[in-house]
Structure formats: C-alpha cells, structure tokens
Length: 202
Ligand SMILES: Cc1cc2nc3c(=O)[nH]c(=O)nc-3n(C[C@H](O)[C@H](O)[C@H](O)COP(=O)(O)O)c2cc1C
Image (cartoon, rainbow, N blue to C red):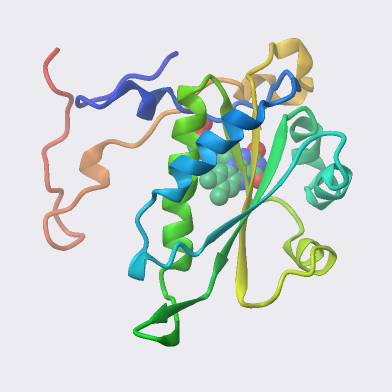
C-alpha cells in the first residue's frame, strides 16, 4: 500500500481504495449483510435513512441487466465483481407527521456508502463506486419512481491479480493520493487555510 496519512487515522481510511481487478468469487451473504448493516447505522437528517440498496450477484436474474446499464469502459472491469449495488435515495422524508422534501438525501446516502465500503474492507472485500452508467435506463428498467434519486452503482469484490484486468487499466491499478488538508480545510471562509501545510512528525 503506497498511501501514508499526514495525521493519525485508523488504517481502514487510507487502506480503502478502488481497484478494478476482482476475482469474481462469490460473495457470502454474511459479508453483504455486514456491509449493509454498517450502512444502516449511518447518520441522516431527521433519521430519515433515505438510502436504498438494490443488489445483484453474477448469475442472478438481474446481473446482466445491471451490467448493461454500465458505460462500456466500466463494464470491462465491473463484470468481474462479485456484486453490484445500486444506491438510491429518497427525496422525501417524514417530519412531525408531514411528508417534506429532504434536502440532504444524497449527502446521507453518501455517508451510508462510506460505511458500507469501510465495513467491506474490514472483511477483506473491496468496493469501487461507479457513476458512469445510464441512470435513465436503470430508472425505466427497474421502475424506480421519481421520488428516488439514483446515486451510484457500487462494485464489490475481492481484489484480483493484474492479469485479470484489461491492460488499459493496469496503470491506474494502484491506490491514488489526496490533496493536503491545507487545501481542504479553511478557517471560517475559503480565504485562509485552517492549518499550516505539512505532516505530523513521525
Ligand atoms: C460516486 C462515485 C462515482 C465513481 N464513478 C466511477 C466510474 O464511473 N468509473 C470508475 O472507474 N471509477 C469511478 N469512481 C471511483 C473514483 O474515481 C475513486 O473513488 C477516486 O479516484 C478515489 O480513489 P479511491 O477510491 O481508490 O481512493 C467513482 C467513485 C465514486 C464515489
């Protein structure tokens, strides 16, 4: 793993990354249940839990349909995954007995997906988010009502060897980096970094 944190964090945050080479081995239901359970405990506005997960595994009735939603470049590698999970979020929530617009449905679904990814990693499975798919086709084919936003598809699998991956992706099959906190965290307004640049002393 080529990543190093600038400040102390639990290893799982830097160890999670998004490979494209997967073994394609079957994922045990227990792994999926644990990852979805972690997602279930994510925080959300009004505790509305706007996320919904639609899951398919190779060989089931939906697998080929889901692969068909993917942009061809994504299909090349995602076809080797052990599960694909379509994440939806409900645009509406209940507040004091009234149905109201939930302005943070996507934000909250993002928190749930992060929990999912980290729990999967702790169990030895990797995830790879996919935004490159035909959302309209998914909405029509899966009869998803407009009340739900279509957020992303997540590929889940065990990391495979490079020889399982189309050569065009070989160069990118390494964990990438992040910009420093100084370019990310600001003091009150966007004008001034909150912290000076640099890593903690080892
Ligand atoms: C919502 C979302 C959509 C993404 N869409 C794609 C995609 O369509 N194709 C792809 O190869 N990677 C996709 N990615 C992966 C990102 O490029 C990757 O997460 C990012 O470069 C950070 O790398 P890491 O996840 O390895 O830390 C997506 C990630 C997220 C969270």
